[in-house]
Amino acid sequence: MSLLAVHELAAARGGIRAVEGVSFTLDAGEALILRGPNGIGKTTLLRCVAGLQPAVEGRIEMAGDSVAYAAHADGLKAALTVTENLRFWAQIFGGGSVEQALAAMDLTALADRPAAALSAGQKRRLGLARLMVTGRPLWVLDEPTVSLDAASVERFAALVRTHLAGGGAALMATHIDLGLQEARVLDLTPYRARPGRSRRPAGFNEAFA
Amino acid sequence: MIVLLKRDLALATRAGGGFGLAVAFFLILCAMVPFGVGPETSALRPIAPGILWVGALLSCLLSLDRIFALDYEDGSLDLLATAPIPLEGVTALKALAHWITTGLPLIAAAPVFGILLHLPGQATGWLIASLLIGTPALSMLGAFGAAITVGLRRGGLLLSLLVLPLYIPTLIFGTEIIRRGAEGGDPTTPILFLAGITAGVMALVPFAAAAALRVNLR
Image (cartoon, rainbow over all chains, first blue to last red; front, top):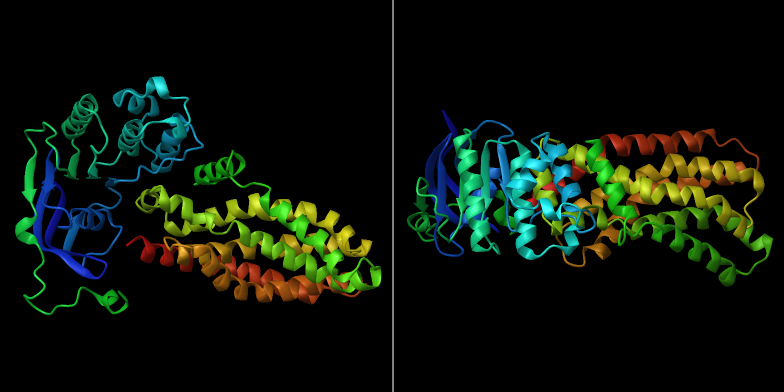
């Protein structure tokens, strides 16, 4: 059974179409990596899938409340400790064990440190550990490996692999090689929206863009 | 959902949370009025209800832009929007957290500031009652303004312009309660109106605020 099915999706950023005609399905246990040059609309597409912005055209089919989204901002509060940050999201999503997530991203030693005192890479690791406590099957990740060192990238790849083995799926945009051989790659370049092709509006909001 | 409220309260009371700022501003405002209009009872007593309410309203305004802006900047708002809690619930809870950290301290401090402004003793109870009934509406309307301006640079100023006119009905009936209370009249009518405004705002505004947030998150 597929966790996510995208049909002929067109996504717009700031009232301008970025990508169009994108179709793919994602089954349990699968990972799909989106590639393409900057500005092609990887983030926009991921935000559509996460439900943060409406698709201009096309359909996205998935079960409700199945997406865990992680983007450039990790959603951390500087005044709270690592554990408090993670526990908050665990309680909001009603998901898994905080200790397990800390251990998976090698954060146990930092558990009582305020998030303000973390390095960029450590913050990222905490942001990714959050995915585990959401208990959601479909991970939608936007450049998950930014500011991670090589060891952490490997650890993250192992985390994704465990998630896939447990019946989850991952859709991610990334420029680096994660070492996930089983992942499919979708290059978005051929789906770039061509402005001259037809004069279709990007949506109602174009009038206000 | 109670977790979100607890987190917001924890954040407000920790370093850099701005807890107590509103009360300090309220104190300064009430302390400065006698310098402006003169310290005589005859000058201060008639304007005390109005000053106290305008002061509470402006103090409330100070921290409004933090309701959503901080969560927007660090990405928490995106994550909350994908969380199992409805966004309407998020806006209502955030307004409640704002009221607890800003409105309640103002209410607790208001009787003391009433003395500064020669508010008659028998009006103090009505002052507390009017603030208790009225200030939840200020926080909720403020959350609506904050939701509209989230993501805008220098949104705080625009927020004030948007929100202050919406505060006018609350201000009118709030001061009327104290004025009637001070003169020994019957404040039932303004109390009912103020309660009606607050109830209406709390029932309707979370939906408007959540809709504004959804548009701003796109």
